[in-house]
Image (cartoon, rainbow, N blue to C red; front, side, top):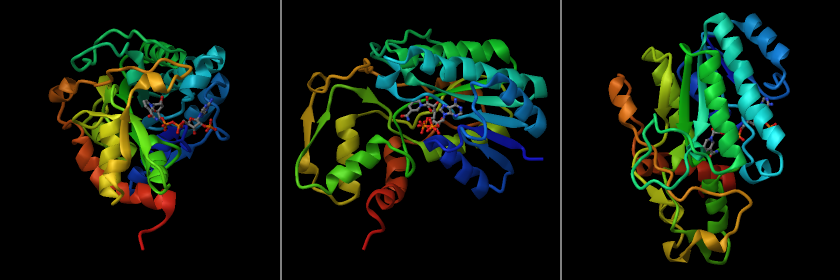
Length: 292
Ligand SMILES: NC(=O)c1ccc[n+]([C@@H]2O[C@H](COP(=O)([O-])OP(=O)(O)OC[C@H]3O[C@@H](n4cnc5c(N)ncnc54)[C@H](OP(=O)(O)O)[C@@H]3O)[C@@H](O)[C@H]2O)c1
């Protein structure tokens, strides 16, 4: 019997978690959307009853932030109703659920890091669906749900900002990147490792902020990427978010506080620059192939 079950296993975090579980010799079942659609409550119930895992990670989500503005029901179906289905199934078998959420549950107007217990005040449909999902999960499985909010995820997998910047670094033109949004670039590989550490530490409930340490603007993050891969940092030009109108509102301030880790035996995640330096080689290889 596998100890772990990942739903949404083909997403960016799902793939990082699979690698991390393999590296640690832990047993798991990875369910992608074809294997388990979390909006199908009876399928979720039946599959979790069959697998009886000790830990479930809900890495499934409707993550198209702009698309959600015009697809409210679809976003809600996955991020709230689907999340509730997984939490109810976890509760029935006594599994600990790690449910992944987002900085978008906050309004982005703060000037100091958001504490884990700051009430949600989302400004987008996606953010609202994720906040509703958090509440639904806690309500369905109060003693066995761990909400882990993350932000600015990147890795060698999927589509993400870091991969886009590596691709643009190879083109013969400058890149304009915003300086007026502050957050925490977060390695999805580090987040996967953090979830495993939390399980080993016996964390069964609560709300945690699973972001790398330090803060950066997208401009800072891009400069660091260019520097690490040997591209010309002077090609990264500062701009502001109003030059890039988007369908959904983006938070200006997305820094999540890490105080909650002090109540556990798990250390907060390392500084984003340290994580980026370690992982950038894999990101680069995924985009443009191995270094000659
Ligand atoms: N990426 C970020 O920067 C970021 C920031 C903050 C929080 N988060 C949160 O972190 C978590 C992981 O994000 P990610 O970057 O790994 O997202 P991702 O790459 O978009 O992966 C999400 C996965 O969920 C699957 N999925 C969608 N609907 C489903 C359904 N009904 N049933 C089962 N699977 C379904 C998707 O499959 P399809 O591809 O087939 O649709 C995809 O494989 C999410 O909860 C997200 O909200 C991400």
